Amino acid sequence: MKRANQISALVLLVLALYIGLTALSLGYMEKNVPGPGFTPFWISVFLGVFSLGILWESRSLPGTAVFSPRALKVLAVLTVVGAVTIVLSYVLGLLLSLTFLAGFIIRYLGGSWKQTALTTVAVGVCFYFLFVRFLMVSFPTGLLGI
Image 1 (cartoon, rainbow, N blue to C red):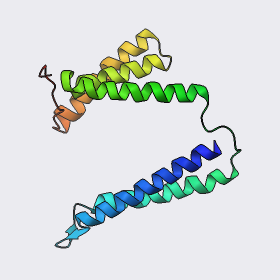
Image 2: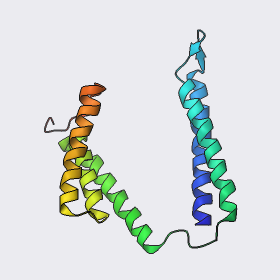
Image 3: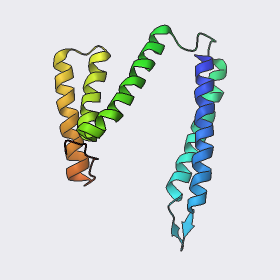
Image 4: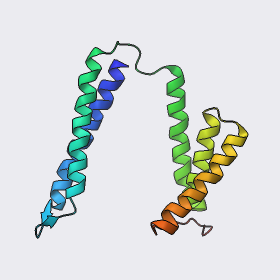
């Protein structure tokens, strides 16, 4: 785990630097009020500090294998499922695709059919009410208009 934590921390640190530089190019302050780069800049600062913390803490971890075969399999499956979700979102719409993604993940990670069904329905309903009704954010619709 030591090497995996070090790699993850370095990737997060590079991401934090990129976000911070991009945020500053958007403008930190505009007319004495926070500009569009204000929040992303501070997110990048915290992300950078936390990634340095991960890097610091990884010094004391044992140097075991980076990823177990099972972890690699789960990573591969979730990557493929994520790509399939993106493709499906063009046909079914993002809300329905994310609902199916949640159901698949629960089932793949060992949930029963009952848990899978309940989670799938709950995620769909919660996403709909939270984003569409409460926050008034519309999800991209697919070819089916859903």
